[in-house]
Image 1 (cartoon, helix red, strand yellow):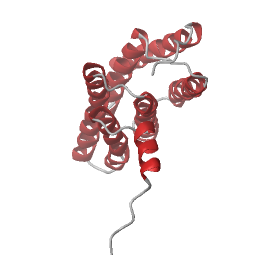
Image 2 (cartoon, helix red, strand yellow):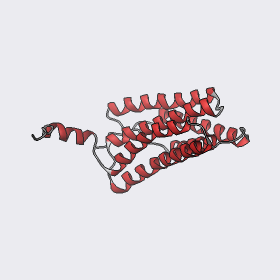
Image 3 (cartoon, one colour):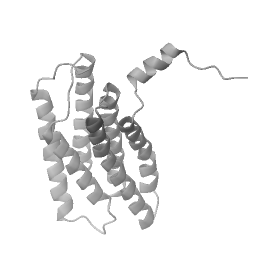
Image 4 (tube, helix red, strand yellow):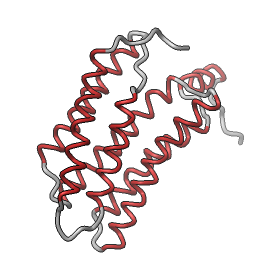
Length: 193
């Protein structure tokens, strides 16, 4: 017996909300890497720690790749604009949990970085629901690079924390706070179709 297919109207509505394209597929792949990263990071052994770092770096680099392809091919979608920062926040949140639990990362810093992400996601959601658009600023992109480098450095299996850990952490916090302030100061753009 043939399987029933979803109604064409439902299918079209889903595709309109969540278009299947390469950038969105890469973003969903990044989300799928989060539990892999966490599982590896909490396993014993240097090999697992290095594997977790590799997954973190690959997932982080995919953030730049999906955005580049979306802009290049003109496949920027509302779904992608929602999924991409959500994927970033999931990866960052997972990394912060691992760093606090396994790498002596300061809890206060994890709270500052996580709070910034949650507050901005709530703000972004409100702006988008009101028909606006809140694209990333240049400072926010630098913040993302800073967090990726900082996270990768802290994930390396060091014997002890060194001065570079603190420099990268300070830089990440500065860019996180400055970019957050920018989002609240800027006027949201008109809705982009």
